[in-house]
Figure (spheres, rainbow, N blue to C red):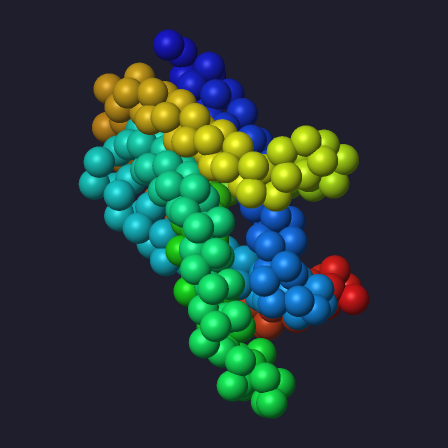
Length: 261
């Protein structure tokens, strides 16, 4: 199978992965609203945990992707991506059951906390955090893994990252539309989550099959992304990288504040 076809298959998987991610986010917010009440708190909790997990996964699994790719070759990163998607699927199947456990606990054990809104809100957040942080962290790890898989040199980072982000976000937009207009009406919230988890499982298996064909040539990609690193470091940095990180942080904060409001 040609490298171009393999790359197109992975891109298709990442498009569908973006779709499933936003279906999860919408469905989880709906379930939390049913369990905890107060839709604003439910949406805020899901958004907080969702993006915290994406951030943790992007950083931590980005480091893992660098080491994994350098040791086993770039083709093996498709396998790592497939394993992440399968992990998301397995956790996706479990989430509705976990929320039922939380609902039982909330109704029968946490009533004494009703007098303190702050304490109750913190407990709600912690329970949701424990359930959702693992799948969202796995989701966050998919982008850096695929950037490492696709990018052959420093000069391709912007184009490769932009293409992957575009495809994933386009899939996310489709996921929101499917949730609002089709899935919830046809399958219900729990059914939508289970169907999405099944899709995640198929995405993961497909990526593992791609890895099977990509692995023979994977040794050729070792160390390629490091070429040109010195020229990048020697460039004239007119803006401090730390300042750019702070600006990016504030931009993300404002964007999610607008979404919640």
